[in-house]
Image (cartoon, rainbow, N blue to C red; front, top):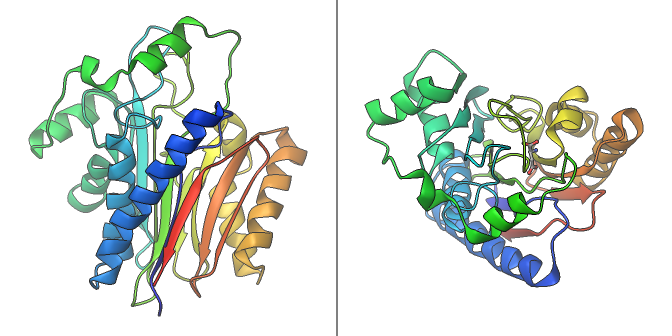
Length: 281
Ligand code: ASP
């Protein structure tokens, strides 16, 4: 199997100069993930690494650069899923760490649970030695300005995510976000809900979504898109069909990236833009 990785940098409407930076950030993230695949690494390692790259890059709404809650705090959500085992891990409303995606992986691999939120997630991060960072270091001037100028809720989202297939034909997906600007404290979106923002199954493919979580959840978007792959749709068609379902059924706006079990790629969005990048070996 030829390895492949596809990443997205969120479906929010942004000015052209920010879009250009996000496209560049996506290219770097895809390369970082692909490096792992090229060296025989797993799809799971590749999607985690690609998402870590975007969590580090302050141009994205994940890790550093996360959107602020109504109270000006950072509360992040993330998930990761292994299509070869259907194992998944996720965190919600977690603070003070740079890499929620890695904490999600720890939840998957080191606990009997799938989703851990809030203080419990932070305590787990400490237990597993994940570096704790001051809240201030996650907040950028751009997010502060957006928060100050925020009008009515909700805004389009700009989560990050990655899907990949490795040389053994295993697929994986990971997604990470600061969520929606001005969200209520404690609000958790689609990103860490398995099947909504993130899904992976070797029998069909892998998906990572972005957009207004409250709409995405109601159509279980990532699993819906993977089911369409299972019905034999090409990932391009499946992505378009999934976004049509999001729009028609619940008036949702967002985007999705997909990889199928043959390593074919697809993506679609009904917002103004969604930066993506891919590498195929
Ligand atoms: N889907 C994310 C959420 O609702 C937002 C986004 O895509 O940026 O939390």
